[in-house]
Amino acid sequence: MTKQSRISNPEMYRRKLIELLDDFENHLENSELRIKVLELVPAVHLFQKLGVSLIDPSNEHSARFRILAYMRKYVGIVISGEELSVVAGISEYARRVRELRVEHGWPILTGVALKSMEMEELEALNIPVDLKLRPDQYILLGDKQDMEAAYRWHVANDIRKEPISVRNKILKYFRTFVGKEISGEELSYVAGNKTEWARRTRELRTEYGWPILTKFTGRPDLLVGIYVLEEDRQSPEHDRRIPEGEYRKVLLRDQYTCQDCGWTHKKWNRSDPRHLEVHHVRRHVDKGANTADNLITLCTICHDIRHSHYST
Ligand SMILES: [Zn+2]
Ligand SMILES: [Zn+2]
Image (cartoon, rainbow, N blue to C red; front, side, top):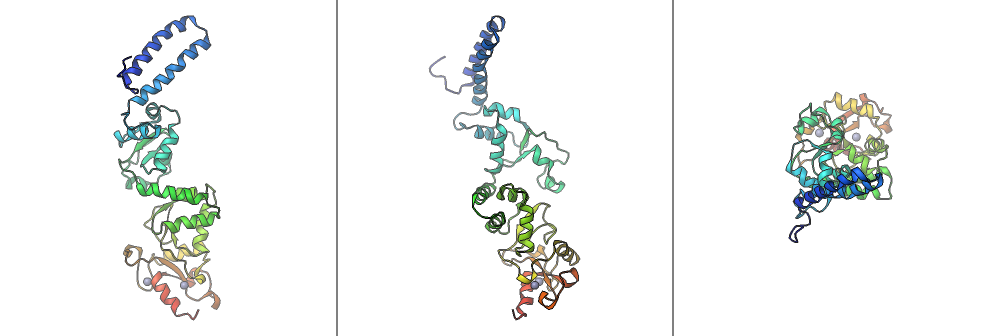
């Protein structure tokens, strides 16, 4: 070995490996089992070093970033976990891939995620609908890190650790990202993977009057499983606690349109943010029923106007 050879020179590892395997011929014939195994241990290390040294050594000293460097060279191509284990030099590559995806916002498609995706999602991401991936196969969909996804993960991680109730964790997360599309996967994470997240989210909308909208509750344009806190305001006390079924029925009947001014979510814009709410025509206190025939869809502006006519 020459002095100039770099620590991570693949050729150096290749030669050492061959030397070692040459020696192994003797052991194979003459040595007992334990000796054979012990002789192969350095070969395992050399093989790992050889794999690791294939990636440009200047900046890739962690397994996670070697995986990333490799995937970025082959955007859009199916990569197997075995390849990643060669360049990473470790066997638990799956955890690193998850970190890259969730914590660092790299758009890596996994076999598991692909299975749970709806047709519309596949189309939106330009993924062929007949694509199949094994659980240990991955595709980097684009060579661009989603900084916001990475930021959101860090916020989610902070909130998840706070000593507050699951409902308040979810509310806090929504209020940090008003108007943004939030997935059930994120909410489940914020809730500390407690299955109650879905029920708590629904309560925030129905009992607490937060405009957390879904495909079925005012935002037919959203994908299934996506939630948006439309505005940072709660609906009037008297319009809360409408049963979920009635709420959906009213929106559907009114075709997701304000019955006073004709506003729909298609007209939404930043300078005039509104959303749809369901209002009691005859108030509870005046014996108004909590059923569809006493309920009406209004935009938040028209809703405020109707309420301003009440004395309370
Ligand atoms: Zn209106
Ligand atoms: Zn109302």
